[in-house]
Length: 274
View 1 (cartoon, rainbow, N blue to C red):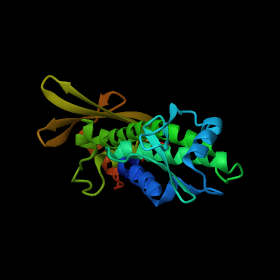
View 2: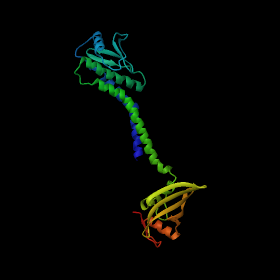
View 3: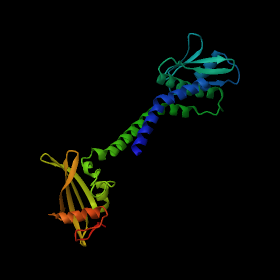
View 4: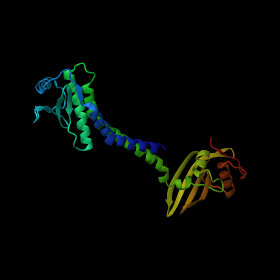
């Protein structure tokens, strides 16, 4: 369950990181995210001179007039034109590339807008440098978080799959139907015996699963070893040992009865380990 939730979280985050965030940023830009109202009308020459004197954008590569006589700023991800309509100033980005490129350009345009606005409105409620840091770190942090989530999801998935990949699961996840068809061997043995240990191995061409644990037999703490043989899609109990000695069939039957909570008829008292 946890692995499934983790995988879904990774998918959702990656979709947001590589598509959702791009649409969100571009949507903000199209809603006027790179525009603001000047206190008064100014011509392009005045705007250019003020930008030349006061623009502190860290990734400013060049400030120049474009072919239409409008101020333009060459930034990290593209070139941005200052466009005036009455007193509405727009830092205009080119958005004719791929989705992620458009996102980077529109995000930089909005960041530039905050720097430009501070020149004309020093008391404006914006923090240009915070926007700049967020823009620069967003992609790097997103990739780091994505990598961490992917690794965590892979670990959870492997953890969830490990019982299925473990050869002991051929016995642990099965049933001794003569004792129970609802409680698996693994649940019964792990709950009854102390310090349970499972191991799968091959003896020649024969697959075997070895279980070891301790319990109380006739008032004494004993070590029990049970060896299962795997025969195609089925298994059977091949050996039951108590303190290293093969247990008689009656003792073995009494042990399994005790494990599954039935009355012991072996002549000895068997109880789970404390």
